[in-house]
Image 1 (spheres, rainbow, N blue to C red):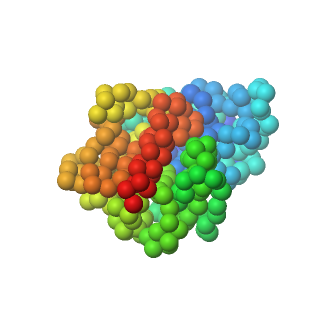
Image 2 (image 1 turned 180 degrees about the vertical axis):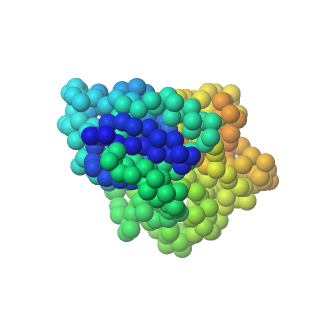
Image 3 (image 1 turned 90 degrees about the horizontal axis):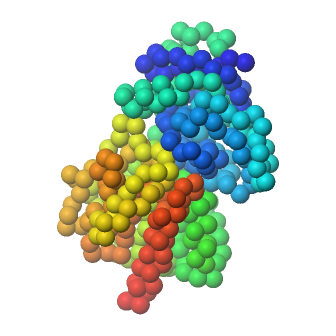
Length: 359
């Protein structure tokens, strides 16, 4: 069956349909990851987005039970050059096609993903739709132009009620803006006793749990759409150690007077080099974000820039000058991706221990 990918500027790509049968609208983005498609599709930071994979074949090792980053993915669609009809791996449980059918996510294959990626690099991310080839183009294009993308993405993917992930070590409150399972996995590996809370939890509720530290997780969309989280961070910083990742990093920066902006096409992939300013160390990192912190707006009396992106110089990490709090734009939990930055979780542990000794 034929399927059309229609872009906001009127460009049309015709390809083969796979995955679920559905017509969808969303923001189209690209990721340069060569592996890790299961983690990418189930990452809630892709909420509402159509994911283009630049790697030419996707799905060759299938889908397994271990690599989910969320149970119910909320990306809108998947675009590939070719998808493997047969998967081969000792952990394989189903093909990519079967997985997308089960999760209700449509896919399109057989299109020129290099041409599509060049267009997104030149023009920036844009709205797109995936429709059956039998549908009238004019009607589908008018619908696309009229579509307004949602701004409540964090609300869609955050947990509705708190839940525990018991451990015997440090007591960490995790604020769920669309968390990846790998963040919980890394904290659990360090024996932390975790309480996962909804995105709109207020400061008093968090502090009443007497945490040793607070984790601000990744999540989708514009950080300015979550003003309640910015207010909460302002009220807890200085009272408890904080570690922010991705959206959590942007919210932490906003809470301290910096500004954020939408990037032209964002950073999405597994091989983004990041420089740690203090040591000059380069880490290859996993990234997935369409917004960034504006360096010119950082208040140097409050925040210190700790990491920058080697390729384009954007801000990749900040630390508070007076409080035990730091954040990074990339994913040190590395799922999928290189494990270069896992040491940041250990730094978070040390920061909590040092804070407890002072108290």
